[in-house]
Length: 198
Image 1 (cartoon, rainbow, N blue to C red):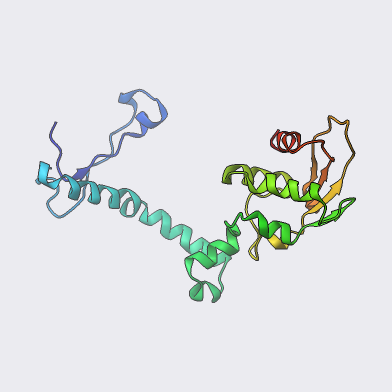
Image 2: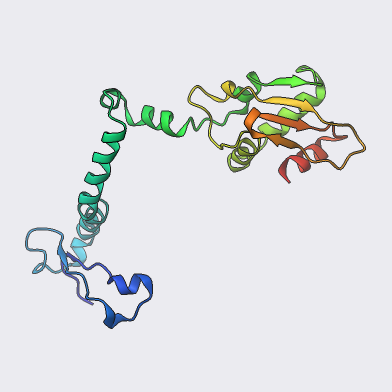
């Protein structure tokens, strides 16, 4: 096949599964000056890919993005946006991505358990051994959100409350409105881990 330095968007019909004859094919867009006459040669392939990527991610959506930006500024018009870095704005909007459960433990409170007892140490060891996706699921289970608040996990004030003894088949129960985890006292770390990941 032979390509020129033009982008040929797929027809709207092919995107929605409609017959090919029912929609007109969108016009080819030159990716650079004289792109329609410039063939893509082996030595130019990296340049073609860079230009196509720029077109798809920037040029082709410029009008839509400008509308979005105007609407965003209209709703969120604040001089703070001019002084915040992207990372700071992301932390305010989406929360912290820090999932270090030692910070969650620092702010935890207990009812029916003492913070220094071996069972609570085991509980935190089990949680700290979780990989990142499992930590996110645990956090969402207890709080309703899988990200940390802006000030960090210690600000969640997770309340771990005793919820029965062995023998029990109870699972841990969470009340997300209160960041409350009802945790039975299981007989072994394996049973504790198994019940936490169910």
